[in-house]
Length: 490
Image 1 (cartoon, rainbow, N blue to C red):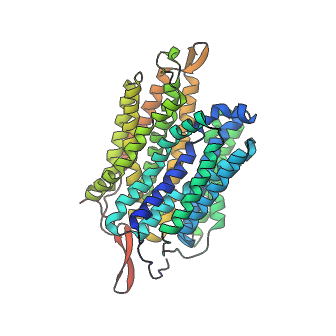
Image 2: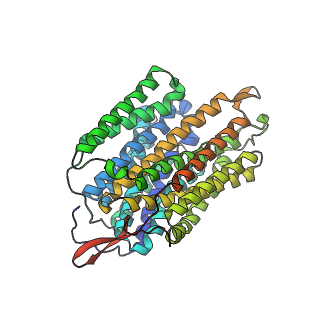
């Protein structure tokens, strides 16, 4: 790691934190903003339902691929620079979606929007580098929770726009907000002076991309193709082979795309496994809540709610996530991020138990969904602190990018699981097939199980110690640049 003279701390640190958090919310909203529109895409564009589904699938693919890659690029060439470029990609993608109704152009635009999710780990890395130690945990907690906040806010916002405006409007608005984000970042967010040495590992990035694309294509499309079809099994086999070859290459290269030796440390490996399980558990909440309350009353459990009402069911959870991010930071500061993550996993599991027994009342459904969101807020705030505790300061962007990737992989597996359960447990209601109440309850049990597994993994994390990781703004001591440690426990 090179260590040029550290830049001064931000002139307006609160504004820098607010700007980065706003950017995180915006890019997270992009992940879910088209979900309420999906049933109408075939009639609006002439595309098939299968093609329309790619408006969601492609953002998952590009987000998963570009997040660790751009995190590494940010470590090497400047985190703010790459963050601004990511926001620029979001603006371009939004404009493409705004000016066309052709499904191919829309999918391309959505792919560009998905790539911008790298803004979140890049923002976390900037905050670690630039803020004084006493402010890092709370700022990182807020930045990390924006992924859940955006997912909760995106559905009702999109529903309101679709109900009241021409559907291209939401893409024009997202493009304008993305441009505003760029201007705010350039004005209030400093560039980090921390850099990694070496050359960018292009072959490593290509191998990681190929393995992820094969894996996520198989997971997201396996339900439609058939889990035992040649395409699905071929992609899964290809993902395994490519991953093995890629791993062997990464262990030999001097400056790898992903430092597998660091990633294999128990503190990092177990945190990433927990991130995958938390991502799975959280995403079930987003996938089924709106659909469940929209089910017709003829099902015996559905509430026949409108698109807007179903979207608003997630809004209290988003507000709760904002409110709880500083609480999570205080828990992590006093008891350690391991304690925070364990508490969060337990809360998520409790939320799904509430959901299992309260599927007939709108307010109780909202209560259960909000409890899950509360646990997610604490978890998403604790995960970056655990990652930063176990990696060198020069690899923060790549490490947080990999952790975000694991959440995305968990979400992909959740999406496939939910789709399979709801499609295979159906009955006729008012002359049309609909998922049974038992199908939704099974989803809640599976998600609760994922949360309990995350709790078990978290309890296996090694106890932290001074010097286990570094966080915070650089300080000069005896003429050398150093960073301050995160400690586990009080």
